[in-house]
Length: 103
Image (tube, rainbow, N blue to C red; front, side):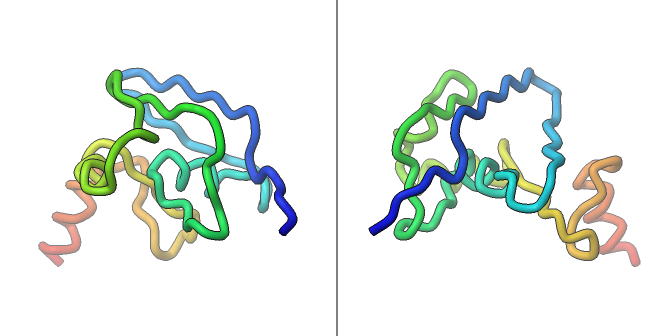
C-alpha cells in the first residue's frame, strides 16, 4: 500500500468571534483540512496519523464520535465550495435559514 501525506504542516489560530475562510487551487488541501478538523476523514482510506486539533481547550482527536457530533454544526462548521449549494458567508446562518422558511 502506498502512503502519501494529503496535508502537512497546517496551523490555524482562530480567536473567539472570528471566521476562517480557506481559499486555494483545486487539490491544495482545503477540504481535507476542514474535514480533518471536523473528524470526518473516511477511514480507510484516509487517516489522521499525527498532529493536534485544539478547540476551546480540548483536543478534538481524543473525542469520541458522539462528542464530535455535538460540536459539528454547533461550534465548528464547514461551508462547502459548491456555490449553488452553500450558504452565503456574508449573512448569518440563521438569517439564511429563516429566509428560506419565510419564502
